[in-house]
Picture 1: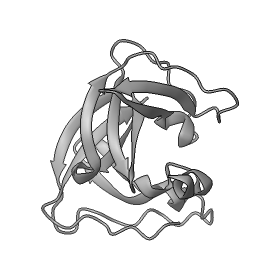
Picture 2 (picture 1 turned 180 degrees about the horizontal axis):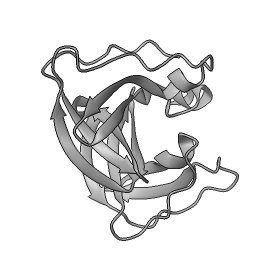
Picture 3 (picture 1 turned 90 degrees about the vertical axis):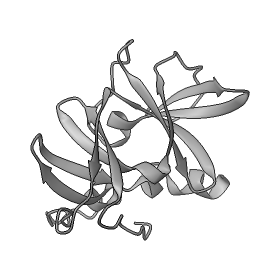
Picture 4 (picture 1 turned 60 degrees about the vertical axis):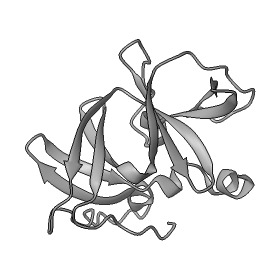
Length: 153
């Protein structure tokens, strides 16, 4: 796992829905939120890469966040959303079902993910928190792109 600094108290997090689950993304990584538009597939790309879209003249790869997290493919429709995030020096679109809320992180709110003896769980989840809507997992965006793709960026 890449060492990622956890957001501090007072930081804002964007919560998104993938199916019935909610995930949080540090708002400082979010560049914009766009409605779903069909993407152009790339030959031989991993199944979690939906393809690419034109973002004001730049080509933006789009990742199905649900598929990347092992939750199954997202059935993209007109209500789906693409969150454009900065991962290292690269911008990537993340397909999610919906944007839910913006949370302000308070002291003691963020906890370590439970240790279930599977280190790959912590590859994507930096922490967990309980909200009025249930348990929300804070994503570690550094690991959304596989290592060889991060190095190529």
